Amino acid sequence: MSIEDQLSGLAGGLPDGISEGVALGTGLADGYDLYPSPLGEVVVTFNTEGVSSLDLATNGYEARFADRHGRRLFRAEPPANWGRHIPGAMEAGTPGRLPVDLRSRTAFQNRVLHIAATIPRGEVRPYGWLAREAEKPGASRAVGSTMARNPIPLIIPCHRVVRSDGHLGEYSLGGPHNKWELLTQEGVEPARLVELAEHRVRVQGDPATGVYCHPTCHVIRASGEWNVADFPSTAAARSAGFRPCEVCRPG
Amino acid sequence: MDDLTAALARNLDGAFPTLVESAGPGLYWGLRRLCGDHQEAEDLTQETFIRAYRSLGGFDRDRFDELRLSPWLWTIALNLGRNHLRSRSRRPTFVDLHEHAASEDPEPPDTAAWDDRLSALPINQRRAVVLRHVVGLGIGEISEATGRPEGTVKADIHRGLDRLRRVMEQEQ
Figure 1 (cartoon, rainbow over the protein chains, first blue to last red):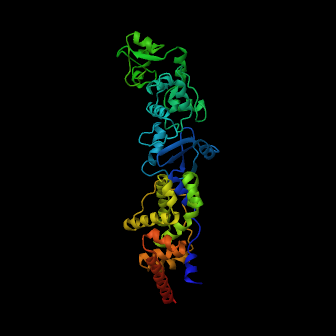
Figure 2 (cartoon, one colour):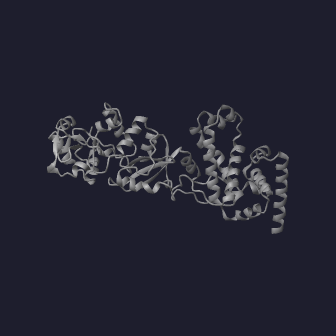
Figure 3 (cartoon, rainbow over the protein chains, first blue to last red):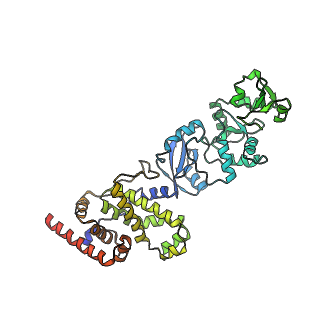
């Protein structure tokens, strides 16, 4: 055999893994890994921009991802510089130092999702509050559909956004009972929210400080349940001489 | 413009996986013979495609018209390889494949002898011989990829093959 023939025999096919690596590195595919969560095992997807989605690790999540995002999915290690923040972000229910990829969302949806991410663990806010904070006070319905299509639930805590009548509302990650479960684990007591709503309590004020808050705000909760005044609206609180809390900004 | 270049110009994201499938084996095996290491050749192949993808995203119609894919990819690969050899440290790729999915070395062990023989060649001869006879590029394409005149490329191949023959005679 000639030396040229021997040299041409030194090549072969493309080793497994290279085209996947290229697809991940170019952003034509996302990587995914599985993590434990309060709602069972979840699949977290990521790319060079950050975490792109979170879904329950039930059958068919790869097809669901391709359907929603139009990209392929390969099992991979998240980027070393921020991948280690994923479990902590799920635990805290906020991205923190974890970059998130929300390029598929509109500018308004991006703003709303980033504001939702600031709601502290153990507290809830109504859809209307989120619309007001996003400077579109009339857009509660658009806020609702943004939360319903939140690509990264648990990490962007849409479970902390509830109906203004105190009922929890829908939850995209497996249904409303999961929202109830998550809030209970955070110490919110969803039954108390429903009870307050039934008594038409929207905000509560502390006569000692003259400040009114959302009922789950840590500022008013520090006052103790028996020391607070209940109000059916922010207008009622203001006309009773109270001013809005600067932390939970009840409006 | 060939069909694949035209497809890339039309729909980069849609056609790019085809480019990886068609040019990937030549790139990987050429790099493998040049650096002698599976992991390094894999990293360099991936990085070459990732850089190519980013560049193609900024190409206008004229750039696509004059693009010759194989030599262009090899220009990128050889530049990366040069810096790689200089640093010799493994750069972390952006998204490392999960260990279950990471590729295994597909090499049968008896080709190690060829890596020894090729590594005995001066770098320009090794590059020219590998690109011509392992990868299968034409003289003009090698000239374009390496930036050396065609006459010099031919001489590099000729001298390289001569040297390989002598090395093999000494082995017997």
